Length: 239
Image (cartoon, rainbow, N blue to C red; front, side, top):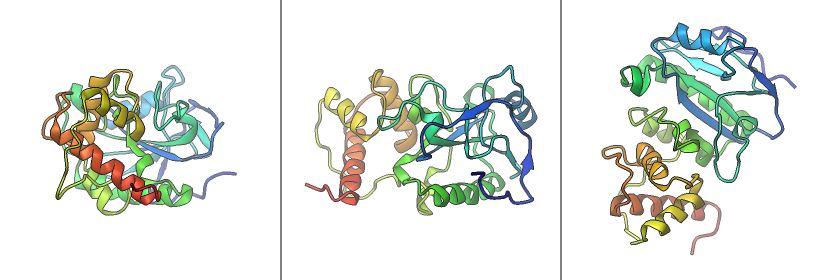
C-alpha cells in the first residue's frame, strides 16, 4: 500500500535505486549528504549508476525532496547493523540532510533545515510507531565507515520533541566496566562492536560530542549505563 499522499510542498525527484522491502519499517536513519551542494547530491541519487538513494532529502533552505516511496526499500544504509538488524535498508526510512560533511566543510545545520526536518521525522515516527532508540544516525549503524550526520547535528532538539533519545544528564554514575565490558554494553545497546574503537567514536559523536577520540572513559561509561537503565525501565526490566 502506498504511503499517504505527500504535502504539495514536497518536490518529487524519483530515484530508480530501490527494491522491495522484506521487513516492516521499525527504524529511521538520518544522514548528511556529504557532497558540495544539494543538486549534486540529488542528481547522484537519481542516477542509476550510483546505486544509492534515500526516501527524502532535506535541503539547507528547508525544501523536502522525495526520491523513493516509503513502502519501497531505498539504498541508503549500506553495510550496517543495529540491534540485531543487518538488513537496515529493509527495516528503515532514510533521510539525507544536505550538508557538505566532514570532507567538504562540515557546518551547523541551518534553522530552516531543522524546521523542515522536524515535522517530516514526526510524521514518519507516527506512521510506523518508531521507538526513539531506533531513530539513529548513519554513524550509529555503520561506525567503522560513517560519521554522519555528525556531532553538529541537533539531536537534543529531536529528543526534546520525543523524536530521539535524550542525552543523559544530572547525577551520572560510572559503573567502572573494563573496556571489554563497555563494548559488550554498547553491543547490548545496539552497536556493531567488531571495531570497538570505531563504535566508541560513534557513540561519542551521538551522546558525548565534546570529545570524540574513541577512548573509553568514565563519562562514556556513565552515559551508556544511564541509557541502558532508562531503556530497561521503559521496558519494565529495571533491576
